[in-house]
Amino acid sequence: MMPAGFHVIAKPIGPICNLDCAYCYYLAKERLYPSNRHWRMSDETLETYVRQYLAAQADSVEETVFGWQGGEPTLLGVEFFRRAVELQARYCRPGQRWRNTLQTNGILLDDAWCEFFKANDFLVGLSIDGPADLHDKYRRDKQGRPTFERVVQGMQLLRKHGVAFNALVTVHRHNGDHGRRVYRFLSEAGVEFMQLIPIVERGEASAGNGGPVTPRSVGPAQWGRFLVDVFEEWVHRDVGRVFVQIFDEALAAWTGEGATLCIFQETCGRALVLEHNGDLYSCDHFVDPDHRLGNIHEVPLAELVARPEQARFGQDKRDGLPRCCLDCAMRFACQGECPRNRFVCAADGPAGLNYLCEGYRLFFDHVRPCMGAMAEELGRGRPAANVMYRINAERQRVLQQGLAGGRPVGRNDPCPCGSGRKYKACCMRRRSPTSPFRQRHLPSG
Image (cartoon, rainbow, N blue to C red; front, side, top):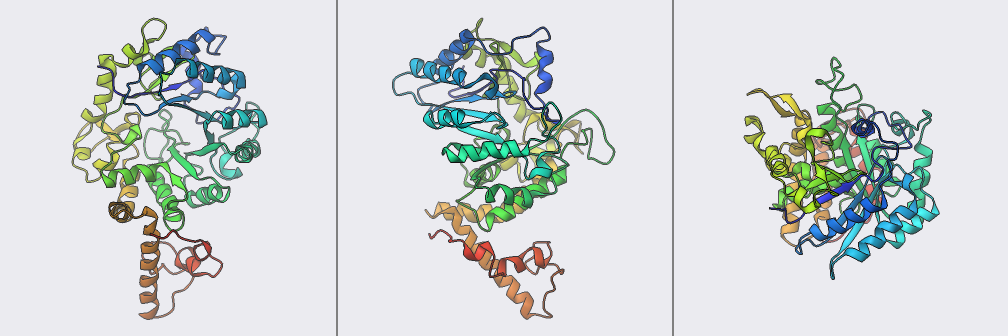
């Protein structure tokens, strides 16, 4: 039986890109089609995909989302997507809602692109890894040149035209110790929606980096610390103003609503990938011959999605959890994360533990009190942002007790609030008259 709702990420230009990012997992997909010279999705494939995708969605699906990725989809030019929008309008059923998202590196964005995005209500994902020294480490063009300035120009154009966008930040070994700096850079640049994606590359083993991964890969504990550092910046001033995807997912778990992101769902298999020629694969991270379901020119999309092997693929996410995950108190929030990262041997058996487990446990354990408080606020019909009042008030109370109980706290002493950071980097900054925490108007509830 076909799932009631499913999502397809289309790769209309396959893995072809104008950048040569060192950690990109999709550039190597050229090997799937070794004799291919023309990567552009044909008009026939585009029309077949749009028609079948809209037809396959159940009436209960509130909005059908067309996701366009690559490679770099803007290499196709605006006219390709103008044609896609025309086809969507032609084939949608009466009352059927649809929307487009597009992930880009931002290099080719100009006024014409942004005018098109705005006019057609595109949601754009912009890849940016932080300030220049962190971004340019791995995100370079085919000539090895840095790309930061061009990406920022693209971001400024999106803002100029009022295009809805979010920042996609890949977290790797180089920027993984700079969570606060990355978050501050983006928030000060006016970014209101952020996605944080850990880089985990299998292959080259490197002593001391946590396992059989490349030196570029983020470390498990490093990933957890990055999330905690970003969370601490966000939870004191930006709840309800800035939205970080993993924080939204955590709050959904604490309120019992369930995850919307596949990596935190108990089972998966409803987020598939369509290559430029119409081949359909089980998942963006499993685009390989073993996970090719078929081609939409030969078998309708609805039938491919409903194939038993795809159902097994999704159920294996749940059924393959090691015992330590089944017994973990954070399973309700994590669900073992993505199967692509489950290659570490658990203490109680063979490989199957997520490489990032240590980091996720650190993060979910750290945010537990705040998530509980936000869930309580929502349960009482009040804004989750009220948690900022409670946290800052408690910090000040603990701080005052510390100051009253003995000698004054020095700049380099551990902060009395118990954060684990130095006083100068924590509550001392928050007590400063020039601190943004004093200047920002917090929402009432």
